[in-house]
Image (tube, rainbow, N blue to C red):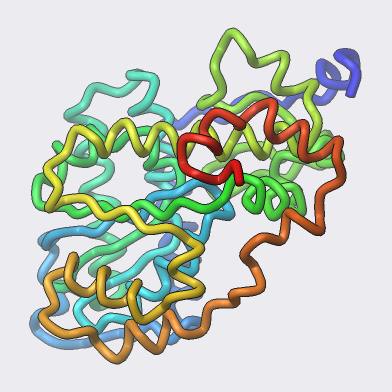
Length: 311
């Protein structure tokens, strides 16, 4: 993509003002209801359902296309959990936390109120709030302080498989330039440098290949989560590998159940994890040519090696 095309089509950021927050809240409640209904979410009309307190929330962390959606839905199968997929408000607000444009107190109010609304709208008061938002990888210290009893589960997947899977989506693709499409948090689709891209490398990001950008995304999200989680006590953090989750679901279920406080593995969790597709492991070996693999390794090779994915 030439710089001329980039300049012509680069979208303007959408400010996260009170009106925008209200709009995202309304849209988020509607989409959350639809998604939970479609995945078997239950509306529990009991006295407990109006309890707005956030009990030991669970945050599922990971780079886009790392298996966060699958893992989150598996945790959501537990009867004590109220699971929510990428809440729009907090997805957009993560940037304000990351760049410091919001005072911590304001950010904490927005996150708490958003989660409470989702909890109550789902009739899930009194249950453990759980969500997955990849953007949370960049704000772990804030989340850990705002929710001092929260637990964090990071799922890590081979960055080569992630880059291939992510490049099949339009979100970072050069071909999406000028489409006018935006994601749940308001981010325009296309090759544009996101807020999580190193500022001194923004132009490089926009000129790179699609596979370089998706490998870049994997590196930044994965590294940021690892750094943030390393500062927390061990009992608040569990790291799982995607490859084990899908090829050894019984062991993965045992580790997850123990971490979440179960003495025995709940049948709901084991059944959900058992639906994984082992064929998704190692797709990169057939999907990448030499040039594509070189692009990924040039951007993320050091992290691949550090995590043992260079073999």
